[in-house]
Image (tube, rainbow, N blue to C red):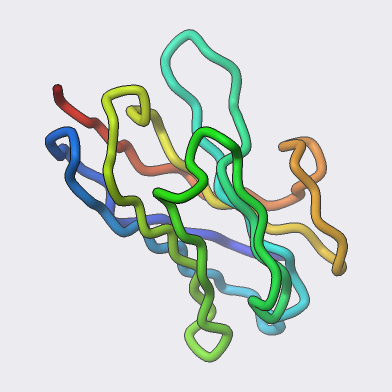
Length: 124
C-alpha cells in the first residue's frame, strides 16, 4: 500500500513557476514508476509526466515538454514536478500516482495509487 500526498500548488501569473512535491509512504519507493496527471474542470484526467524507478528515464506530454521537469529523490521518498513558463491552460488539479514495476504507462488506469491532488491556477 502506498499513500501519496501532494503539495506546492497555488495561484501564479502566466509565465511564472511552481514546484509540486509528492511525498510517498512506501517502504520501497524505488519499486514504483511515478507519474503526474492533471484534470481541468469539465475535462478528463490527462497525463503530464512520468519518471522511471531510479530517475534515469522520463516521459512528458507534448503540451508541457520543455517547460515542465519531473524528478525524484528516492532517499526522501519524494517526486517533484518543476513547472516553468506556466500558461492559463495549465490550470488544473495536479495529482501524483504510483505504478508497481518498471514499465512506463501513460494511462491513468495503469496507476494503482493516487494522491488527493493539489490545485494549480494560472492567471492571465
